[in-house]
Image (cartoon, rainbow, N blue to C red; front, side, top):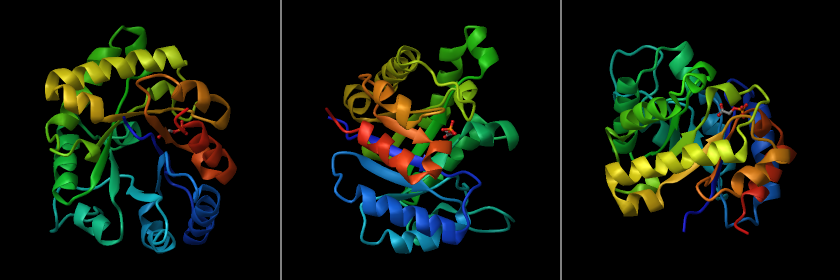
Length: 252
Ligand code: PGA
């Protein structure tokens, strides 16, 4: 039995004051919900103040990325131990925006995953194909390559790894995968997890869907048997929308 996991990826949004206000609102509205795991991924600058607000909450704190070294001459990077130090228990790694705009590769993703797990963080590893790759029939091959990059450092504790399937063509476009399209890829990912890591891992590892998830489409997506939660971008910036998505993830 996998506990659904819904995470808000705030991307490059929210000042400290705005982040504190949003997370306070989420705490107030989600306090009673125990059957869905919830997380937020604010920008680095808001992690510490948001962590303080979350001290008496079950909402988990995630970073949006982390580096693969613990310290040294790496201007502009943030180490996983530093993220744990300010209260993060999760980090997103390999988001398509990192791959597209910042040269992230399957090899660098693997190094980041290994470092994050070493520091005790849980990892939300992102996979997903572009429009052109889907049209060319390469969806499974692309997803497999991304997944193998993440699994180069697979943890022993399956609860510490979450895979987010985020078709690039659905991110921030308002164009969501249909529940059937998403389920097809999620089932494929679970099959590959089974082949690589065995039955127990495949049964335990949660696979989130991401890409234009909104309150209005969450319910039908989250009903699919292999969709175990959502990684939510734009809609997570609004408390009412995000709360409605979390409620849609509750086991029926
Ligand atoms: P979106 O982003 O919900 O705004 O499409 C999802 C993501 O990139 O994690």
